[in-house]
Length: 447
Image 1 (cartoon, rainbow, N blue to C red):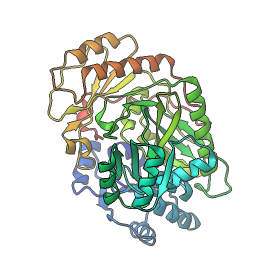
Image 2: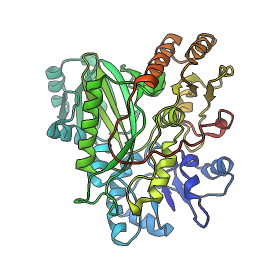
Image 3: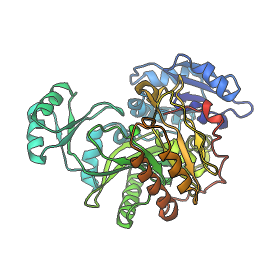
Image 4: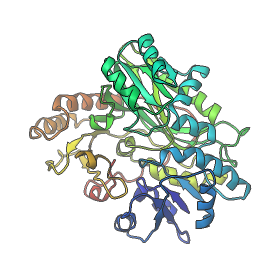
């Protein structure tokens, strides 16, 4: 069992470490093995994943480790652009009767190339912000005049927290034109609320996403509110919450869009969508990611079903087709609170829970920026106690204002009462797993 990438490997690995199986994790983190040994209580063989991969490097890597199953796990920075290469390698492995459940190449391109996603969205009628694909600086300036400032300038192939510029004036536009790698996508800067949602798809029973197979069966975790869109384009620094209710017309359009994506491109494995609901009530798809991300902490805390564990179980069950697991309905509000690193937090109020997700060698994540993201879990009926706890935090504890946290807590409580599931496929929901233990959270990997 070869895991290609170390992102939250402590949560992905347990189902893979079944009796008789040997798991190998390849990643960028030099101290990965001691962390996994401490987290799992078991020795896991770890190796180095090359920082750059060519067309023939992936088949050679798979052959070198002599794996029966390879599981792409691309959440760490620098690995997202490997998805198209993994897709092409999976086709060769399928011929060789090896198993590599991975998104097919068409979906991998959408999830790793913003220009490809925009062009495909326009062709298929998916709701995206107005935008123009540009190959040089003069075209960017013309697009900005056409769309009107402010605009977003996004490099086609860039990973999260990189390659995007919020441009408010001509000076910022000139700097962006000089800094970006072309081609770029110039889009209108939306005003509204940002959301994220995670999926697990089994796009092609028995053939791992090959053309001509049946459409994808997909299960969805609850929609998460990522807060209000801003010029920093860094939702991980905002207070976030799950579940979040959407207007009925947005929920319906989102479900229709996801169904068309899965029918046309048959994703196979975990993926994520960031989208916005504008102040005018319009749905706009911002980007696709062919992986799980930071939202998965809230997905797990709200439902009790960890997406990473479901991903591993789906990879093990892949030859039989179908999804072995889908999330149960949310049982509590999961409020993610960016706090300055090293800041002590008081005990959570009675009836609620506080789950710590500190960084690790495998995923230092926000710790590099000087903050971490614990999650406060709030069952229905305990909102007032949680609100009093938020208001009692010492000034400066949160990166954001207590008022923003209180607003997101109210949004999550409303979502817990009102948010309906995004019904997309026939995956069977499992019994909830044990929810994260707040005390054990100190060993959990952060994002």
